Image (cartoon, rainbow over all chains, first blue to last red; front, side):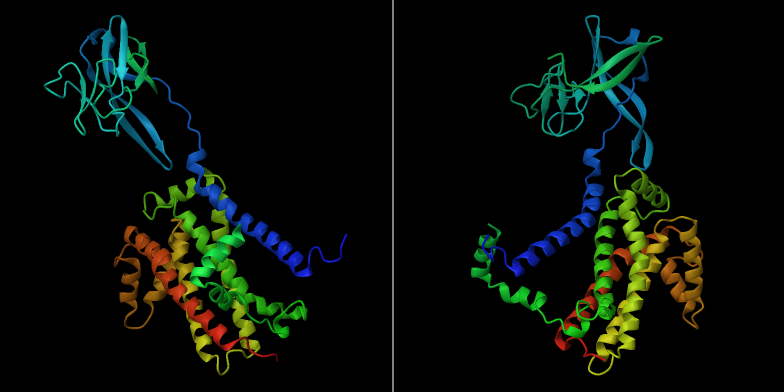
Length: 167
Length: 224
């Protein structure tokens, strides 16, 4: 090995930068992990929530059914009420999320008098078929999400949100 | 790669003299612990600044979760300490660093005093240093209230009563600090938060800049 492959100055530069970098990383890393924690947190998915909607009263016409659950938002716990559009399709009960797949506004059944058999989003005139399928040529890029449904003592229960399976 | 980027920028903006001015300076033998180990006393100022940097960084990250509100302050601190990854460490850095910065600053002051470094021509830097000392104590005092636990509340009560004992204007200082004539509560907490994260740091940065510019201008004082 030749004498001066690495000069004393280079060696000191590398070791000091390395040690300094290690110490700086030890200082900054906990803070970065602390900051990005929300991205890495996993949330437990909720159970079925009982509504006051009698299953026997559900018809072919979509109705808005409210359901309330306790939401844990970091240190803030609150009761949050959300809604689903519920109707019967044959024997099957369909519960669709009212959240528009365009930019998250709330859709209404027959909100547009020109399209009485469709869901309508007033923000950017997005439309969906009854089964949640988005109408081509309107802003939404996908079908409305659906909720899992169940029945308890004749009342409707609403479960977790899943991608639309009807369209 | 990095060298090429540096050269590209340097060719256009001539940045080498800028960082040379900041980073490249003589360290006299009598302040270099490698020559005389006892010279470590000259490190206290740098250590104070190092811990201050940690305080600024950890404080910035803590505000991602903290809310200065009587309902939620304690809960948000509890949440960030117990539910967020490394929350205990980041809050721990800020908590222990707050005490350590006072200790280091005090040792630095003692060193400057006993080496007589405050004498002509460095009187102005001593005065600025005393200003920094006051700002640091203010940061410690205002930060103490923010977790909004019992210790915070009563420590601030006592602190504000001390401020109120100033002749003639004491009562005004008290109301100014607490934001209310009677209650130590919601208004006090938001005020202390604003002072702690905006007003005092702004003053601190200005004073630190003056402190460092002066030491670079005048150089480190000679050996005893």
